[in-house]
Image (cartoon, rainbow, N blue to C red; front, side):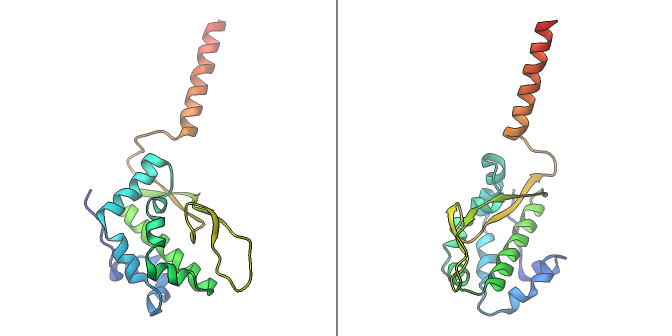
Length: 172
């Protein structure tokens, strides 16, 4: 699948994206670096593979690399909680736009990316465990034309139903 390019203009034209214009207007927020980061076919492929093959949110496929960008890490390590939260939410909108353009839809569920550290004043909120250091959870997606693989939960249900059916036919 060809890569999806989300520009500042396209992001701000999105009904949800436009509510994050403050993220663009802050000169010290590195959203241009984030746009450039996600403008990569390999990363977009890994985002899809994260859902398809690892049963994790698309952001899980690239979050460590994203958090390692110096400008992203520097911004998120600041103590301004509200601005940091808005920045992370804007990244979630960007991920949604890319996934929808690639034929995916939101499930309405979130997947875990980390375990928050105990709250301490004067320190930025970060994680003590999990996959990501700064992100707690991220939206899950499914292909609009159907998933090629069943989830473990669905497979388990299917398996248990077939075992129950076999047991009933043996008893008869």
